Image 1 (cartoon, rainbow, N blue to C red):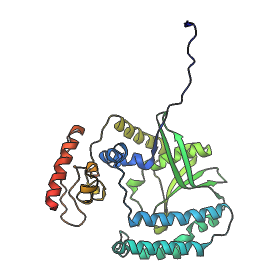
Image 2 (tube, rainbow, N blue to C red):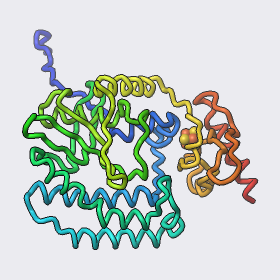
Image 3 (cartoon, rainbow, N blue to C red):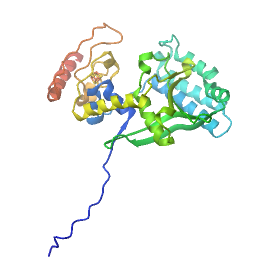
Image 4 (cartoon, rainbow, N blue to C red):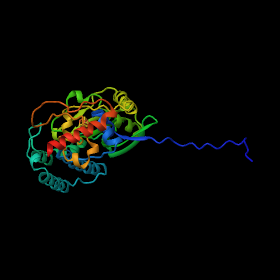
Amino acid sequence: MINDNKLPTATAVAPKLEKYSYSKLSTYGQCKFKFKLHYLDKNFLFSDSIATEFGTLVHTTEEHIAEAIRSSSNINYIWLKNNFILGCKALAHKYPEDWTKPDKSGRTYSEKMYLYLNSAIYRLESLMKQNPMLEIIGVEQKFEFNYDGVHSFTGSIDRAFRNTDTGKIIIQDIKTWPVPAQTSELKAPVQFAVYAMAAQELWGVSASDIHCEYDLPLCDCRQSALSEDLVTDGKAQIDKWFAGIIKNDFKPTVSALCHWCNYNPLTNPDILYTKPNAICPYFSTWQKSGDSVRDTLVKWENLDNVEVDRQFIVSQLRQQST
Ligand code: SF4
């Protein structure tokens, strides 16, 4: 017999948060359709470049230096430099053309390698000597926090310092940019808003006690985020992006940046045969070397048309290539 007076015991289950990294969300900011292809349709296409691989070499070296300073150990520059040179030699072999091509600053990777080895590698040690009130409190500091009860952010902060005089926290993101950023790029960078929220959780400080900056070893400078209220401004942008994802707004952002997109069959023709279902049919026809006409072969209408548009592009481009 069922006892109707007895109610079933309710077990509280914490809602599962949808995990986001800054780079995942910023992909939506760059191109909503690219976000859908990568993260929702799970077409993971990765490609290395000399810029990302050189950046990794610098990051790894900087991480070792910061860890040595933090633990009051000797910085083994000889070992670090040897590893850096070996990594660069591999890059010169892998990307022979890019290795000798000057960038926006007029320097080649070979020149940047020597710049780093001869001077930039010592910048962190000098900074710490000139500012004895600074202590390193985080190196590749991992974080995860609940953003809004639905989404969580995960990631890692390159470097964090505490000013022992004021208690303020400095968050640094290391970039191997050839030239400093434009002022417009320094206003309310969402990446720093995420880091500042993480820092509040990690170190129990208020937003006003957090300073965020880029460290640019190849430009021998640091650039601060210019937003006065980084977290509030960043949250407004983050909320807008999350609202777009929830509304299924995946309209492509067609621009010259399509040239570097892995889902563009014009600049990544292998995809026509290896992953045709991952192709974006809405790419800009602009090419870095060639005519500079910015056009599209297929105009976006809505999500329902994607498959038909894709089939059309695949057949057109396959015909052209035969
Ligand atoms: S090719 Fe252009 S429009 Fe298409 S997904 Fe890539 S960036 Fe977006």
